[in-house]
Length: 406
Image 1 (cartoon, helix red, strand yellow):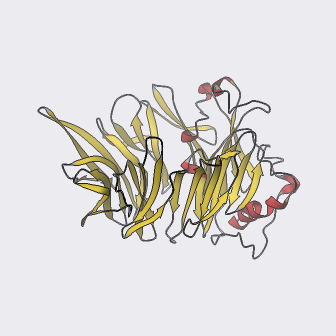
Image 2 (cartoon, helix red, strand yellow):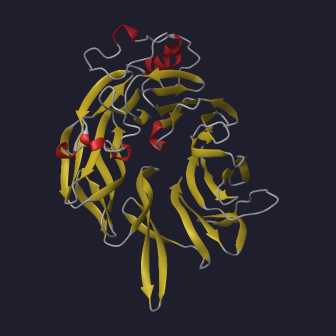
Image 3 (cartoon, rainbow, N blue to C red):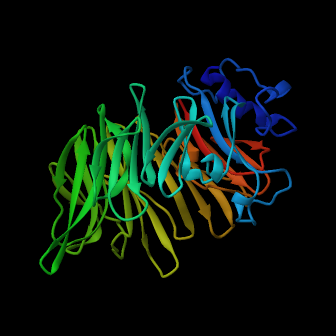
């Protein structure tokens, strides 16, 4: 089913009286409610070969999963939908090696991969069937498909160290490193970063490394760097962001060619408390926040040339998104009205309020595609799919855990 149908599903269903049901079996999923694509629909993304995939947890009807935290004591299923049709319904539970934790759900290549550790081994399932198991308890921090091979990057659950695996077999190991970020591709190379703590006499030194396509190099940071937030390679260039005591007016962005301070352009300069590098067009953006009072943060988005967005302290930004086309979007929360809000592409300045019922639970439930913004938000008894400012209720008793175009 082409991506046109996915766009039509989201954009057209908002005019139906009844919400779209994503909680039925594949045999009757959508039924007469399936919406066919409309030529020239303004909500159609440009890529007509991709599909909309959504993963969700479904708890029994009437079960209050929001207030009852003992989720493992009730029956639950992990669902995968392709363009609105349920293609996988997987029973969850420790004995089945399937967790309801959203961080263990990965939508890749049209399939739902789930990860689980029993403290001794790690299990990876695809659409509910065991695909891999290996010795050692790992928290899978990154997963991707490359040339029909499944690559995983797992941090040891107990102690330090991590392992990069190809189809379950170790391709690289480190017994002491702590991962920074996830696993990703840049110019066709598999990349990740990590930190290593080294004792030198009475001192403890932190060293930072970037690994790309099996080649490891140390990333230099100044001796007065108080916190290294992120290290990422984009377009073959290695970037790092950190807080530096000698540069108190903003985060420092370093690259292979030097370093620069990203200023806040505020009357009172403050150091950042968190930053992350994200690819954007053929360049990068840096997203982050700093504490402006004891209980409030200000969220900021920078480019190399200066600050692009600055939000008032009452707005909590859950995530920024950017793409190679130059689009920027954001999902946040307005503490003044107790509402979830989204900021639409192309520049994240057009705001849409989604009410008090829905929440953004994971960075994996939002995506940019063809100049449009998609998000799956979780509510109490009903979830919500968003295509830009258009909304479609989703009648599934449980959270949406993933959303992707592939």
